[in-house]
Amino acid sequence: MFPVAGLGTRFLPATKVVPKELLPVVDKPLIQYAVEEALAAGVDTLVFVSNRNKHGIADHFDKAVEIERSLDEKGKHDVLARIRGIIPEGVSTVVVTQEEALGLGHAVLCARPVVGDEPFAVMLPDDMVMDPGRGALRQLVDLHAATGASVIGVEPVPREKTRQYGVVAVEDNPQGHQQVTAIVEKPEPEDAPSNLGVVGRYLLSGRIFELLEDTRAGVGGEIQLTDAIAALMEESEVLACQFEGRRYDCGSPMGFLEATIDYALARGELREDLLEFMASRATGSAG
Ligand code: G1P
Image (cartoon, rainbow, N blue to C red; front, side, top):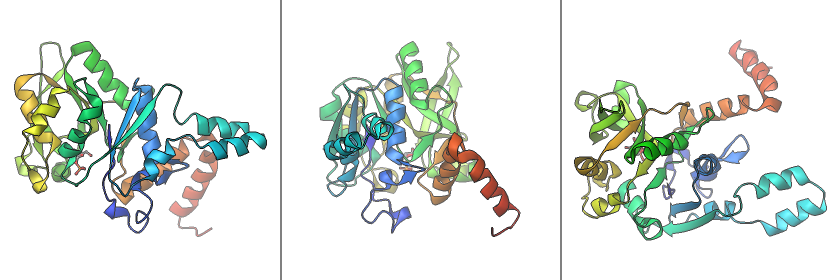
């Protein structure tokens, strides 16, 4: 499930009409990268938890009959294949409305009627992870398949930034996996149990829904997924996965720019010209 109900206030005015998740990184909307990572991890149902004003996200994953017909008639088969490939056959998308912005935990709970009791993934599209060959979510799925445990994605974050993240403490379990022993939402640096921050990838047991039902508002007055994970950890194993692959915080303009540059550099047809352009800027040439 993809929580996409946020207002994107840090990107105004770009996000006044266009949802932040549809802003492009090079030539694909942010959300499409997360969806591709999910598909590569074997996901076959995409649940978007959105708000009633953000319609474009579901439309992006809908079949665009007129565009496809026109591309076909004009013989533009490469673009046609790219449009058709956005959602492969057999994958369904479901949109659930979060009526009030009550927090990430609440957004996850909104997906309960679609997800049921199965283990499921939560992906925050703001956190982009460049695919190092095995996508970040696939790495969580593999760890879950090997252990049966719930798994959350983590990475070291600068101490002074712990208040932007959920932060975990971990201990090696007998199998050599990192077991989460504490999780705190947005701690001050002096209260943080470590420097391992939670990034937006979770593989959770369906039990989390029942725990979310009992979770009261926490930090920021919001129902926090972190607090329900703390409760889950009391009754079953939760593992931390320090996945491979560089993460970009596309919730901030700087992270968004870094992602844009790195994803453009990863594109063969753009790389050389972009490097040349950046080198000219780095030497102060206005070129
Ligand atoms: C959310 C989670 C937080 C996590 C972060 C990762 O916070 O509540 O635990 O570390 O995503 O991006 P948000 O960034 O929505 O405030």
